[in-house]
Length: 384
Image (cartoon, rainbow, N blue to C red; front, top):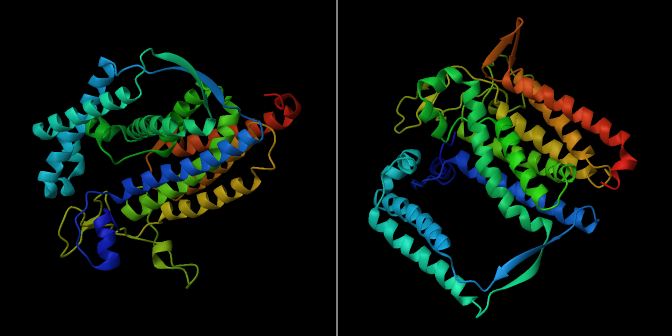
């Protein structure tokens, strides 16, 4: 496995280049890039069809930088400089434990002060260059796709919080033993928590800018599925713990690679399993028994679902239909993966189930209801 980008480079090229990048984090970033591409394409297509529209906003131009803007930029610059210079001067420590450095009070005061001054000066000069003798109000046109940068930021923030909250609820016994560690650790993320909270943030921004919820949901369906597929690549390559149950069965086909049927996830980032003889470093564990590599299964299935959604998107005319189909397919995919995946189980009235099984079932039911509603009210929703 490749818990860090350095492990990946060492495997490919045989070079030892210490870099402070976790493989999982890199693929999360790539997932956002993939979603940005798909969302933007759909925004532009829907605008060209007249389904969604640009909006006019009245803004004031020509004002000098306010005290609040200067202070905010200064604080932001200080935090970055405080951490970055410390990380550079203590590079080996940072490479070995990025989370410990970033979430601690450790930093470099000089770096913080220098970058705070740079950010304040930058904000001042940028505003000063556009300053007018008399500030005035003007109307600007904002196209829907231009909202994407704002949406990505808020989706990332709320998605991360939601993923952490749902994961800690799922692993409550571990969370109560170390609440702060559970909340601030970069590992341990639940997809559905991120989907629900990140999606809610996107819908809020869309509604504020005149995009109706069903249109926004339809725009997001293919992009969210693509992002999920890309993100799961990181889960598999890093070995973050969301693998399947033990699989000691013989391969059904001789041509099937071992790692695609049963895998022990050596050097996994979750640091689970037995120590690997002769291994040096933080990630030196390997599962005692091979398990189903469920993340790679989800990579494949999710990408096929994305291709299907991308193919049919131009044929679906009724608002809500695309998102309903997305909910049904993602619900089915996750429900069946749960049958061979390691997860905490709840028991209600003697029936065992996982958090993801419950949510995926609700998503399928909700998606089916949305498809029926969209189809039944097709004529009415044409003016939606």
